[in-house]
Length: 294
Ligand code: HSE
Image 1 (cartoon, protein in one colour):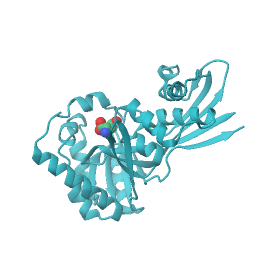
Image 2 (cartoon, helix red, strand yellow):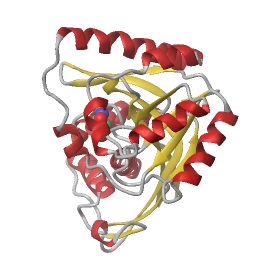
Image 3 (cartoon, protein in one colour):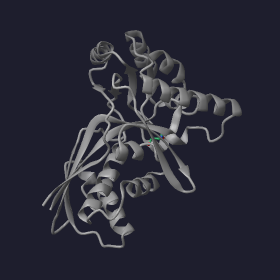
């Protein structure tokens, strides 16, 4: 039996939606898992070719959940999602491992069960939700359960992911976010996050420009990305509706409903930062997809 799981990358926060909004993007990670005599991991740096690999950890969690011992497997990774760049690579791995284990066990768990497990593992649901459900999701914890609410972004959106040649570690990016905020900042965040969702759904660039103003994390995290200001200026000058840090960075995203504007931004990034990667992405409406070959 060979199980192949394809999981979309995701961008989280989308400006004012810290730890709440997440959106699946058209960049995929593929994980193939087959029974094997010993554990074999290939397709990633040597340091991750062992039992600590996040795909294997996700796989093991599902076996633990159903009270079974995990069999040795051969895992092959083919991923276009860069590691530690704020594009949900950890979630793709954990979700991929979990979905594969569930398929190997004959699907004892529902997708929502897997989403709960993945959220527990990650500590927040905003990348886990798009990894399993695709699209744009608002997610939150209610009585120890993660709840994911789906929204339908306008298909015209182009998200230009500008991926620097360096990592930002999520732990560091979370550490510098203040743990307490004022009532005014809370009100600002709620109103702007709600408006952001509406703007993404309707393809209203003007509304998204007004709504995508964050006060919780971006003012602090931009200090970890030296090129933030200049790339923001470059993107907005080219006509982007808005510009935000993807997840905890280092990827930056310029959002626009115009393919021409998106192209201009990637061209300009290529000219000024040839060592950065920029990709024009769209929303991915599917979450993890499992294929089983007997
Ligand atoms: N919402 C999380 C953060 C995503 O911004 O820290 C990173 O995993």
